[in-house]
Image (cartoon, rainbow, N blue to C red):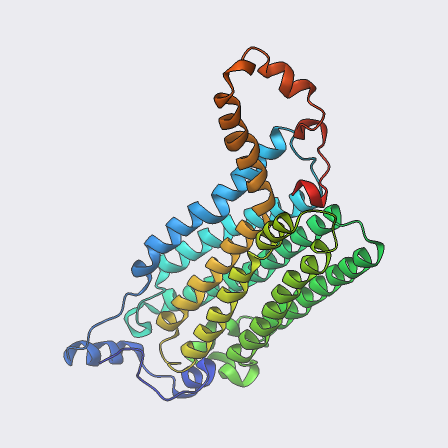
Length: 345
């Protein structure tokens, strides 16, 4: 028997607070009947660790190397991506603490204190998720401001900045004050204080937020596409630049999968410590891919300067003695052109 399928599809808070089932009794009954207990989180650890190293961490490190080497000047996009990466570190740490408290395990197998702490940590992860993605989107918008000089386009970018910040503030306030008093967000499960009667349904908030974030991601894809094809460069280069900016499609795709996981989780409301694990995984992955996408131009600069250029230099043995002079005095070296333009991306 699937441990998730233990109730009809009703909201988490409503199911938990109105039935107020005795968890200890359910645990005894579950064990006596020979039903298997769930432990979903360990199954996701390899994916979490691998993707954390390969996507945000590697791309962030390469970006910092590019900045340290003087291939690109430091800007507001770099400051916001540093904030975003620090938030991802916090979010990933919170995620593992969440797992140690009982995420992925059947609710009725956990000590009462652990259940409350599990929902507290889930609440913290949700807040970090909101702030992290907002910071990463701000970084991408600042990057567009550095690359594209069009006056009208810059007005659109600043308007998008304002909208991005407004969406973040609105959803963050709704999330924090979803329950009155606020602590019902992590004590709803035991029916204390009236439970979900004082809370907005978390699945509705998650769905609304997911749809809005996906719309913002699509808009961030459209913005550079309207400018790249107007630039004076070869079509092949335009295509490559568009493809690089278009990597944000992966963030959008993961956002859609995450939205679906929220819908799936609400089908089994009496065991949210299990059903919320996949939503948590997709939330982390969405942030990881977003950082990778935001760092893509700098990753390409790293490859072009430290990999491709050195290979070309190594093949040309006649210039070995003058290599240092060529790099220092060449009119188009990245070190002398730290300011990004669309042609340098």
